[in-house]
Length: 314
Image 1: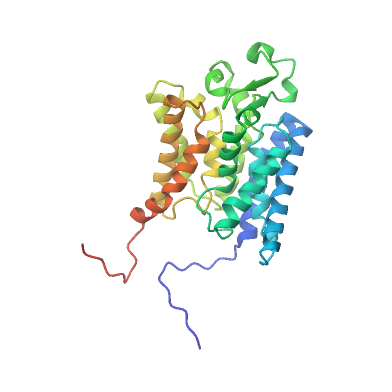
Image 2: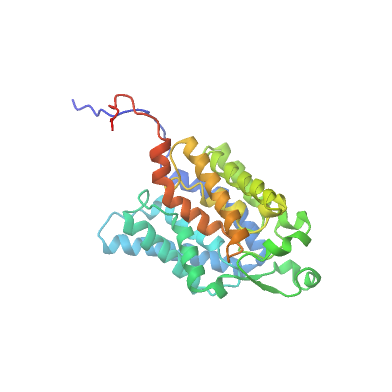
């Protein structure tokens, strides 16, 4: 009889990658539905192309590398959907396709597949596309239902800028910021839908509250300290979407709760620093990627002492 000896903690669970990814897809459903409702069928095409490109990229790569085909775990679907939700509704369809391919092949598979990437694949893809085609990635359409009725508020049917709401959201009713009656990427505009997804993931225990609460709380506090409206800072741009669906990625945030608090605090601080003193009015993408790189260091200093381990002396 062979015994496997390992250190604790020991956890018996029936969850696997597929069930976890399915829960994330369910949590993303309200945001996806809201984006399609607000921006129309064009948004649906962007999301479909992103998801199909992600699944095909993973299938082709695994086939070429003669590895087991694991697209059934739904991780590629989640990555593709998040890539699509980070796109403007009017973007050329080849951009979400390229973004998904970069996320899957360059960030996920080249580092060994799911569980081995040190950066959030969808977030890296967005950063790459922003740096390569900034004009295409920052041309935001007004929701279809507002076309022709919001000229007084915005003046045009399309707004260009990393996050147009950072400077203009002060004049927008909070109800519009919450419901998504604003320009932006497909997934970031409807904050109510994002919060519904967060509540679901907390209830089914897919994520813990530490990262999103410290992320959003830090943005609110630091925005107030620099003289900005904390509520507007939270509800404008991609803060909520990033805090709920991007920064909570299992692989790229710290393992311990204290480490997750530090991670969320760092993300929030970086967002406000970039928004306030950087040349780029939105900082969610680069803040999360920066903290992804610090995750191993945070884990090292926040991990608890393992029972039986001999303490090393200097």
